[in-house]
Image (cartoon, rainbow, N blue to C red; front, side, top):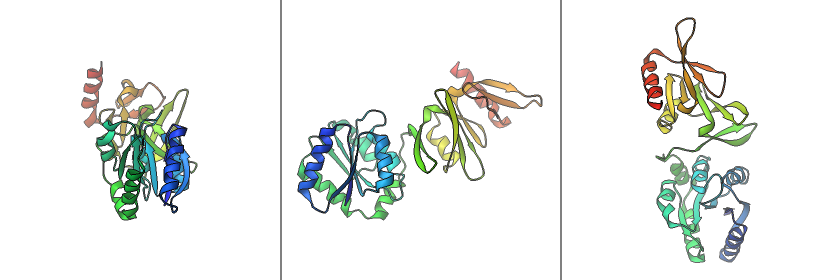
Length: 249
């Protein structure tokens, strides 16, 4: 069984290594990570069977990282390790196979690993397909063969093409585009509080809209405050977009 240890404290990672070494000789710790982003990068390259995942970490926390790990095919089994018991419900919703309070006890760790070991790949794949109510804070995209996480609050719009959805983002002084293989309808449902549909093929972040205008042909277009792009607003969506912008003030 291949394990990845994720914790922002080096001493906590060292203690888990020590516990695992005493449990079973067949357990192989293939890597360590100190952040959620590192966990995803390491898991992509190391293909662990199990991830021992801390919850409270700087930047992306363990709950968010687990959502992206669950999107792997097949996903690793996730066992959360945390000093706080208030995350139990969130961990359950994140499809964890174990939830261990620190200081982690060898007996509980062994039980969780046994549970993870008993799950075959099909069961873990089924966990991956289970949707969660809480919207993601990042969207994973492939760039030059690597997985990159784009914060949702840095996305200006999502526009559907024939096979992919174009994601337009702004990060500080730079901006760019990426392609993702998700349906616009699903994205709309997940991020309904942050994005508004302006066209059958486009969702725009409310915070990114500076106003509406008409072109020389009388078509309504949305102006964006972060990029020069202007997107068409279809007739059926004009009234709803105006209402949202008015409510925003």
